[in-house]
Image 1 (cartoon, rainbow, N blue to C red):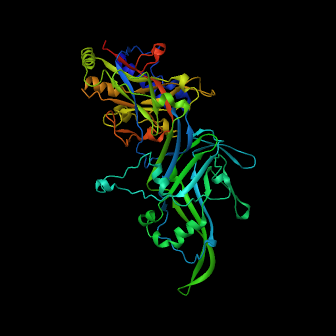
Image 2 (tube, rainbow, N blue to C red):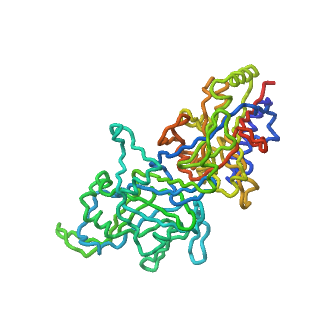
Image 3 (tube, rainbow, N blue to C red):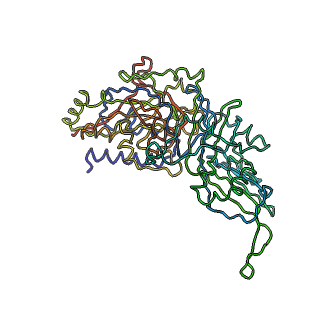
Length: 536
């Protein structure tokens, strides 16, 4: 016969398995409530711990070599307007190519830049056409932007000369002027205005008519015709610099993407590392006759450049009338802030001190109580409530991330959670949580975020029972929960020197209720909820 403790553990395992195989929409509506407020499986609840949470602006942040980067202009309501430019090195797919006879630019048939979008396939029409929906688009997808792609003139070195070429070189989000001042020729100078002066992120597939009447259909992407003369000079006339990628990356220092708002914001998240530049050209064809090379007409060949190497996300923040409250936020690390403003990019995070911070008298008293009472900690959560009136018309992040802000590392709960989601990797580590809990039910339109809940059970166990340091915690928005490394602040601060990489990647923000008294919303204050049992 199962004893009470064993039964509870088994029940918890069953519940956990159930929500792991549920879909994302179901998780947002019910999965976040593993322990519901009206049914705690007989656990005792302690939510009286003192917490001080306060805001911290990051200002400029390290932003080189991010896995995903924004491009565009995003007017984010209370969080102001951000213009996201981007610079990347390029590499030869095949080093030291051979050109036999390409005497002039007339032999260049095309030079095409292609960067795929994050897109979801929807359906195929009766004519064979495919319909897609773009993911990770912020603002209005119909809005046009001025897009200019320049030759980058600033060398993106691997190592920092100020550190004796031992430390990796860091680049920061506020260095747009550096690259703008060093830019070379504009390369997307096509007469087609949709490729430059009236560019839009289009969900349309690319359709190409091939020989024999075949039709090639390709997924949506940024596809731009680039200047043929430039690439003739750079690749063919300058072919001696194509011997290897180390030489080539100094010869051709990459691309600088620059955007400008026209009549409204539009921004897309892009994986530029999947981008290519393909130059198609005609070259002499040869055949071997009696051991000698003999002309055999011409053949079509290609050179492919991959958008690989060092990159920098360049973020320019512009205050707006709607962002005055955010722009004037002043941290209160003593008594805490009423509202917590989390914003990705060069934005803001929040710091959290539990139990009065450090080895406080409150913590020592709780430790003694828990040890003498033989507490079994079943679950501990930080519960954050969204300021819904403020966030009503804003894009909301799908997830937030709580971490050890003292050491810039993940919490034990994060490391222990090995749950995955093959279809939607951003929803992995679901036990650790932080995923938005939404209004309504799956399938409803215009669902809004109510709450974020992050499980820190193992962290609290360690603090109470293993004398682990009660470190300051940080909370930030996250673009990808699998990324747990940190990026440096350009100007280190007393409270912190780094922020999560996943926050730098995310252009969104949210406003949460903090820990200072808000009389009309006292029930929405940030709380630490500890659920425990005592031996029978």
